[in-house]
Length: 214
Image (cartoon, rainbow, N blue to C red; front, top):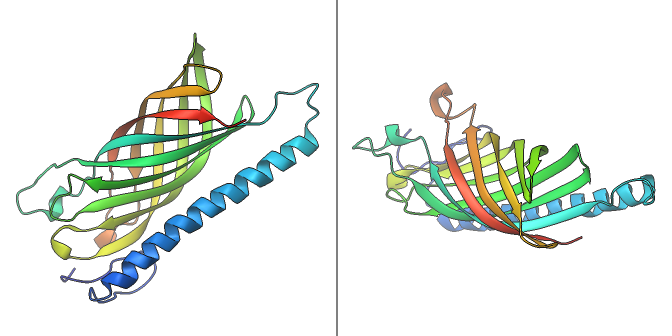
């Protein structure tokens, strides 16, 4: 990997001088993901309302929220001193519940603080969410999400987009009928096709707050 070049699973190298293009591309991709999430949520809500009689089944619900995260990027091999610097950032999530055992979670995360010489990672993921156990107002859950991760390497070496699989779980605590706290959320991610035919395994925790839209 030579300095100043783009690394990606699917397309070839691109000169680092296209920094502005990269920034615009990133913004467009994030907006596209948000638009796709809205379309999916609207379609799911409409389909549920048409198929499931309200008198016999629980109504479709949707919770949106935000969170703060701390992640170990698992890329210390690229640093000069073997640093295990943790990346910090913010994110947003959407939980869609169709039935008790049919739930979907989508999330976006931007780890842009405490960077190691410009290194940062972004995640855009969606997948099934499973409630494991409810005790009082707290609900423990598990999840498996799939999507893609974006990484900018330290020292300006380059950037890339990679397949991202996240295995995780946590606890949501219900404060009121509308508000909830994401007390803890843990993710262990697998980027199976990283550089030089290797894999990357970032992991971290998040805490946040959610609002039940309907």
